[in-house]
Image 1 (tube, rainbow, N blue to C red):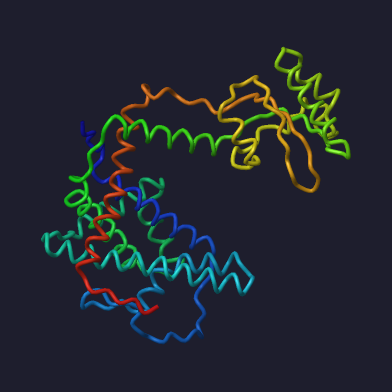
Image 2 (cartoon, rainbow, N blue to C red; image 1 turned 180 degrees about the vertical axis):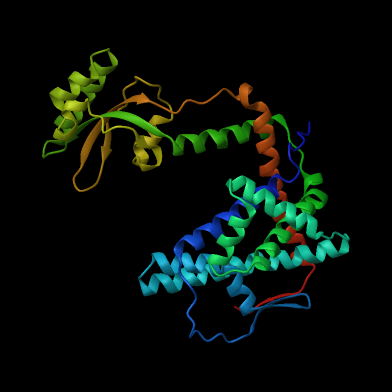
Length: 334
Protein backbone atom coordinates (compact mmCIF):
# COMPACT_ATOMS: atom_id res chain seq x y z
CA UNK A 1 0.00 0.00 0.00
CA UNK A 2 1.35 3.41 -0.91
CA UNK A 3 1.92 5.91 1.85
CA UNK A 4 1.26 9.38 0.42
CA UNK A 5 3.82 12.07 1.12
CA UNK A 6 2.61 14.42 3.80
CA UNK A 7 4.27 17.25 1.94
CA UNK A 8 4.94 16.74 -1.76
CA UNK A 9 7.79 19.22 -1.52
CA UNK A 10 9.56 17.55 1.43
CA UNK A 11 12.56 16.86 -0.77
CA UNK A 12 12.68 20.50 -1.79
CA UNK A 13 12.34 21.78 1.76
CA UNK A 14 15.19 19.55 2.88
CA UNK A 15 17.43 20.98 0.21
CA UNK A 16 16.29 24.51 1.07
CA UNK A 17 17.59 23.89 4.57
CA UNK A 18 20.86 22.57 3.19
CA UNK A 19 21.26 25.60 0.96
CA UNK A 20 20.62 27.89 3.91
CA UNK A 21 23.14 26.03 6.06
CA UNK A 22 25.82 26.56 3.43
CA UNK A 23 24.91 30.22 3.15
CA UNK A 24 25.00 30.94 6.86
CA UNK A 25 28.14 28.88 7.45
CA UNK A 26 30.01 30.75 4.76
CA UNK A 27 28.74 34.04 6.09
CA UNK A 28 30.04 33.22 9.55
CA UNK A 29 33.50 32.67 8.12
CA UNK A 30 33.85 36.26 7.07
CA UNK A 31 36.43 35.49 4.37
CA UNK A 32 36.38 37.39 1.10
CA UNK A 33 37.88 36.15 -2.20
CA UNK A 34 41.34 37.46 -2.97
CA UNK A 35 41.18 40.64 -5.01
CA UNK A 36 44.35 39.74 -6.91
CA UNK A 37 43.22 36.24 -7.90
CA UNK A 38 43.45 35.59 -11.62
CA UNK A 39 40.55 33.60 -13.07
CA UNK A 40 41.27 31.85 -16.36
CA UNK A 41 37.97 30.97 -18.00
CA UNK A 42 37.61 27.53 -19.51
CA UNK A 43 35.07 24.78 -20.05
CA UNK A 44 35.11 22.14 -17.29
CA UNK A 45 32.33 19.95 -18.69
CA UNK A 46 29.93 19.66 -21.58
CA UNK A 47 26.44 18.21 -21.16
CA UNK A 48 24.81 17.65 -24.53
CA UNK A 49 25.58 20.90 -26.31
CA UNK A 50 25.72 23.00 -23.12
CA UNK A 51 29.07 23.87 -21.51
CA UNK A 52 29.76 24.34 -17.80
CA UNK A 53 32.34 27.07 -17.25
CA UNK A 54 35.02 27.20 -14.57
CA UNK A 55 33.62 30.53 -13.34
CA UNK A 56 30.20 28.91 -12.84
CA UNK A 57 31.74 26.04 -10.90
CA UNK A 58 33.77 28.38 -8.70
CA UNK A 59 30.74 30.49 -7.94
CA UNK A 60 28.66 27.45 -6.94
CA UNK A 61 31.43 26.06 -4.74
CA UNK A 62 32.28 29.40 -3.12
CA UNK A 63 30.61 28.84 0.31
CA UNK A 64 32.38 25.50 0.79
CA UNK A 65 35.70 26.90 -0.37
CA UNK A 66 35.45 29.80 2.06
CA UNK A 67 34.86 27.43 4.95
CA UNK A 68 37.82 25.37 3.84
CA UNK A 69 40.06 28.44 3.68
CA UNK A 70 39.05 29.50 7.19
CA UNK A 71 39.41 26.13 8.87
CA UNK A 72 42.41 24.38 7.35
CA UNK A 73 46.00 25.63 7.20
CA UNK A 74 47.76 22.54 5.88
CA UNK A 75 48.54 23.22 2.20
CA UNK A 76 48.46 19.58 1.09
CA UNK A 77 45.14 18.91 2.80
CA UNK A 78 43.75 22.17 1.44
CA UNK A 79 44.63 21.27 -2.14
CA UNK A 80 43.13 17.78 -1.89
CA UNK A 81 39.97 19.02 -0.18
CA UNK A 82 39.52 21.79 -2.77
CA UNK A 83 39.75 19.23 -5.57
CA UNK A 84 37.07 17.08 -3.92
CA UNK A 85 34.79 20.10 -3.47
CA UNK A 86 35.09 20.95 -7.17
CA UNK A 87 34.39 17.35 -8.17
CA UNK A 88 31.32 17.18 -5.92
CA UNK A 89 29.84 20.41 -7.26
CA UNK A 90 30.64 19.59 -10.87
CA UNK A 91 28.80 16.26 -10.54
CA UNK A 92 25.86 18.14 -9.04
CA UNK A 93 25.88 20.70 -11.86
CA UNK A 94 25.94 17.95 -14.48
CA UNK A 95 22.87 16.38 -12.84
CA UNK A 96 21.19 19.79 -12.85
CA UNK A 97 21.87 20.24 -16.57
CA UNK A 98 20.30 16.84 -17.18
CA UNK A 99 17.26 17.78 -15.11
CA UNK A 100 16.91 21.10 -16.90
CA UNK A 101 16.75 19.18 -20.18
CA UNK A 102 14.13 16.85 -18.74
CA UNK A 103 12.14 19.84 -17.48
CA UNK A 104 12.18 21.46 -20.92
CA UNK A 105 10.83 18.28 -22.48
CA UNK A 106 8.11 18.10 -19.81
CA UNK A 107 7.39 21.83 -20.26
CA UNK A 108 8.00 22.55 -16.59
CA UNK A 109 8.74 26.17 -15.77
CA UNK A 110 9.27 27.96 -12.45
CA UNK A 111 7.55 31.30 -11.99
CA UNK A 112 9.22 34.12 -10.02
CA UNK A 113 6.39 33.90 -7.48
CA UNK A 114 7.35 30.29 -6.72
CA UNK A 115 10.92 31.36 -6.05
CA UNK A 116 9.64 34.09 -3.71
CA UNK A 117 7.63 31.51 -1.76
CA UNK A 118 10.65 29.23 -1.65
CA UNK A 119 12.80 31.97 -0.12
CA UNK A 120 10.05 32.69 2.41
CA UNK A 121 10.07 28.98 3.35
CA UNK A 122 13.84 29.04 3.89
CA UNK A 123 13.58 32.09 6.11
CA UNK A 124 10.66 30.61 8.06
CA UNK A 125 12.50 27.33 8.65
CA UNK A 126 15.51 29.28 9.92
CA UNK A 127 13.25 31.51 12.03
CA UNK A 128 14.61 34.71 10.50
CA UNK A 129 13.18 37.45 8.32
CA UNK A 130 13.64 37.34 4.54
CA UNK A 131 15.61 40.58 4.63
CA UNK A 132 18.04 39.06 7.15
CA UNK A 133 18.44 35.99 4.97
CA UNK A 134 19.27 38.18 1.97
CA UNK A 135 21.78 40.15 4.05
CA UNK A 136 23.53 36.92 5.04
CA UNK A 137 23.72 35.87 1.39
CA UNK A 138 25.25 39.20 0.40
CA UNK A 139 27.61 39.28 3.37
CA UNK A 140 29.38 36.12 2.25
CA UNK A 141 29.94 37.40 -1.27
CA UNK A 142 27.02 35.87 -3.17
CA UNK A 143 24.41 37.93 -4.90
CA UNK A 144 20.72 37.73 -4.24
CA UNK A 145 20.34 36.40 -7.77
CA UNK A 146 22.74 33.54 -6.96
CA UNK A 147 20.47 32.56 -4.11
CA UNK A 148 17.32 32.88 -6.19
CA UNK A 149 18.89 30.65 -8.83
CA UNK A 150 19.64 28.03 -6.18
CA UNK A 151 16.07 28.12 -4.90
CA UNK A 152 14.76 27.85 -8.46
CA UNK A 153 16.91 24.76 -9.08
CA UNK A 154 15.59 23.10 -5.93
CA UNK A 155 11.96 23.80 -6.84
CA UNK A 156 12.52 22.49 -10.35
CA UNK A 157 14.08 19.32 -9.00
CA UNK A 158 11.19 18.85 -6.59
CA UNK A 159 8.67 19.05 -9.43
CA UNK A 160 10.65 16.59 -11.52
CA UNK A 161 10.86 14.19 -8.59
CA UNK A 162 7.09 14.22 -8.23
CA UNK A 163 6.56 13.77 -11.98
CA UNK A 164 9.27 11.25 -12.92
CA UNK A 165 10.47 9.60 -9.71
CA UNK A 166 7.59 9.46 -7.23
CA UNK A 167 5.44 7.18 -9.46
CA UNK A 168 8.25 4.59 -9.37
CA UNK A 169 8.18 4.28 -5.60
CA UNK A 170 6.11 1.49 -4.06
CA UNK A 171 6.27 1.15 -0.29
CA UNK A 172 5.41 -2.04 1.61
CA UNK A 173 5.24 -2.98 5.27
CA UNK A 174 8.67 -4.60 4.87
CA UNK A 175 10.09 -1.32 3.59
CA UNK A 176 8.68 0.54 6.58
CA UNK A 177 10.19 -1.99 9.00
CA UNK A 178 13.56 -1.67 7.26
CA UNK A 179 13.30 2.12 7.60
CA UNK A 180 12.58 1.64 11.31
CA UNK A 181 15.75 -0.40 11.72
CA UNK A 182 17.77 2.30 9.95
CA UNK A 183 16.23 4.94 12.19
CA UNK A 184 16.88 2.86 15.29
CA UNK A 185 20.54 2.46 14.37
CA UNK A 186 20.87 6.21 13.84
CA UNK A 187 19.39 6.89 17.26
CA UNK A 188 21.70 4.37 18.89
CA UNK A 189 24.75 5.92 17.24
CA UNK A 190 23.78 9.49 18.11
CA UNK A 191 22.59 9.14 21.69
CA UNK A 192 24.99 8.52 24.56
CA UNK A 193 25.03 5.28 26.56
CA UNK A 194 26.26 4.72 30.09
CA UNK A 195 28.54 1.79 30.86
CA UNK A 196 30.20 0.56 34.03
CA UNK A 197 33.56 -0.81 32.97
CA UNK A 198 35.84 -3.10 34.95
CA UNK A 199 39.32 -3.15 33.39
CA UNK A 200 42.03 -5.73 34.07
CA UNK A 201 45.59 -5.24 32.88
CA UNK A 202 47.06 -8.26 31.12
CA UNK A 203 50.45 -9.14 32.55
CA UNK A 204 52.76 -12.05 31.95
CA UNK A 205 50.28 -14.64 33.22
CA UNK A 206 47.53 -14.21 30.62
CA UNK A 207 45.67 -17.40 31.54
CA UNK A 208 45.32 -16.30 35.14
CA UNK A 209 43.89 -12.92 34.17
CA UNK A 210 41.41 -14.53 31.76
CA UNK A 211 40.33 -16.95 34.48
CA UNK A 212 39.85 -14.06 36.91
CA UNK A 213 37.78 -12.16 34.34
CA UNK A 214 35.52 -15.19 33.84
CA UNK A 215 35.03 -15.51 37.60
CA UNK A 216 34.08 -11.82 37.86
CA UNK A 217 31.54 -12.20 35.04
CA UNK A 218 30.01 -15.23 36.74
CA UNK A 219 29.71 -13.37 40.06
CA UNK A 220 28.14 -10.35 38.36
CA UNK A 221 25.62 -12.52 36.56
CA UNK A 222 24.73 -14.25 39.83
CA UNK A 223 23.58 -10.88 41.13
CA UNK A 224 26.59 -9.51 43.02
CA UNK A 225 26.81 -5.72 43.04
CA UNK A 226 28.87 -4.72 40.01
CA UNK A 227 30.06 -1.57 41.79
CA UNK A 228 31.57 -3.73 44.53
CA UNK A 229 33.27 -5.89 41.91
CA UNK A 230 34.72 -2.77 40.26
CA UNK A 231 36.06 -1.45 43.54
CA UNK A 232 37.63 -4.81 44.32
CA UNK A 233 39.18 -5.74 40.97
CA UNK A 234 39.47 -2.86 38.47
CA UNK A 235 42.92 -1.60 37.48
CA UNK A 236 41.45 1.71 36.29
CA UNK A 237 41.97 3.90 39.35
CA UNK A 238 40.17 6.87 37.75
CA UNK A 239 36.80 5.07 37.70
CA UNK A 240 37.12 2.92 40.80
CA UNK A 241 35.04 5.38 42.86
CA UNK A 242 32.39 5.83 40.14
CA UNK A 243 31.45 2.17 39.67
CA UNK A 244 33.54 2.11 36.49
CA UNK A 245 31.50 4.82 34.80
CA UNK A 246 32.92 7.82 32.97
CA UNK A 247 29.45 9.17 32.38
CA UNK A 248 27.34 8.81 29.24
CA UNK A 249 29.49 8.17 26.16
CA UNK A 250 28.53 8.46 22.47
CA UNK A 251 27.87 5.01 21.06
CA UNK A 252 30.06 5.78 18.04
CA UNK A 253 33.01 6.53 20.35
CA UNK A 254 33.02 3.04 21.85
CA UNK A 255 35.44 0.41 20.55
CA UNK A 256 33.87 -1.97 17.98
CA UNK A 257 34.05 -4.99 20.31
CA UNK A 258 31.97 -3.17 22.92
CA UNK A 259 29.49 -1.95 20.30
CA UNK A 260 29.05 -5.50 19.05
CA UNK A 261 28.51 -6.89 22.55
CA UNK A 262 25.91 -4.22 23.35
CA UNK A 263 23.66 -5.30 20.46
CA UNK A 264 22.38 -8.33 22.35
CA UNK A 265 22.42 -6.87 25.87
CA UNK A 266 19.79 -5.28 28.07
CA UNK A 267 20.35 -2.71 30.84
CA UNK A 268 21.78 -4.36 33.95
CA UNK A 269 23.39 -7.28 32.11
CA UNK A 270 27.11 -8.04 32.37
CA UNK A 271 29.17 -8.65 29.26
CA UNK A 272 31.59 -11.47 28.50
CA UNK A 273 35.29 -10.61 28.99
CA UNK A 274 36.57 -8.57 26.01
CA UNK A 275 40.25 -8.25 25.12
CA UNK A 276 41.11 -4.71 24.04
CA UNK A 277 44.39 -3.91 22.31
CA UNK A 278 45.87 -0.44 22.47
CA UNK A 279 48.75 1.14 24.33
CA UNK A 280 48.66 -2.06 26.37
CA UNK A 281 46.36 -5.07 26.28
CA UNK A 282 43.56 -5.21 28.79
CA UNK A 283 40.47 -7.25 29.51
CA UNK A 284 37.29 -5.29 30.03
CA UNK A 285 33.97 -6.37 31.46
CA UNK A 286 31.10 -3.93 31.36
CA UNK A 287 27.61 -3.60 32.69
CA UNK A 288 25.12 -1.77 30.52
CA UNK A 289 23.48 0.93 32.63
CA UNK A 290 21.31 2.65 30.05
CA UNK A 291 20.53 2.54 26.36
CA UNK A 292 18.57 4.81 24.02
CA UNK A 293 14.83 4.50 24.47
CA UNK A 294 13.02 3.74 21.23
CA UNK A 295 9.28 3.89 20.60
CA UNK A 296 7.83 0.64 19.29
CA UNK A 297 7.47 0.24 15.53
CA UNK A 298 3.67 0.20 15.85
CA UNK A 299 3.78 3.67 17.44
CA UNK A 300 5.91 5.01 14.57
CA UNK A 301 4.46 3.11 11.65
CA UNK A 302 3.09 6.18 9.84
CA UNK A 303 6.40 8.02 10.20
CA UNK A 304 8.33 4.98 9.04
CA UNK A 305 6.12 4.58 5.98
CA UNK A 306 6.92 8.21 5.17
CA UNK A 307 10.62 7.61 5.77
CA UNK A 308 10.50 4.55 3.51
CA UNK A 309 8.99 6.72 0.77
CA UNK A 310 11.83 9.25 1.13
CA UNK A 311 14.47 6.50 1.05
CA UNK A 312 12.80 4.97 -1.99
CA UNK A 313 12.69 8.38 -3.69
CA UNK A 314 16.43 8.80 -3.24
CA UNK A 315 17.16 5.35 -4.69
CA UNK A 316 14.90 5.95 -7.67
CA UNK A 317 16.33 9.43 -8.16
CA UNK A 318 19.80 7.97 -8.64
CA UNK A 319 18.47 5.40 -11.11
CA UNK A 320 16.58 8.06 -13.05
CA UNK A 321 19.64 10.30 -13.30
CA UNK A 322 21.69 7.34 -14.50
CA UNK A 323 19.12 6.79 -17.24
CA UNK A 324 19.33 10.45 -18.26
CA UNK A 325 23.12 10.23 -18.44
CA UNK A 326 22.95 7.28 -20.83
CA UNK A 327 21.02 9.35 -23.35
CA UNK A 328 23.18 12.49 -23.30
CA UNK A 329 26.75 13.25 -24.40
CA UNK A 330 28.80 14.19 -21.31
CA UNK A 331 32.43 15.29 -21.42
CA UNK A 332 34.12 16.10 -18.10
CA UNK A 333 37.25 18.21 -18.46
CA UNK A 334 38.06 19.15 -14.88
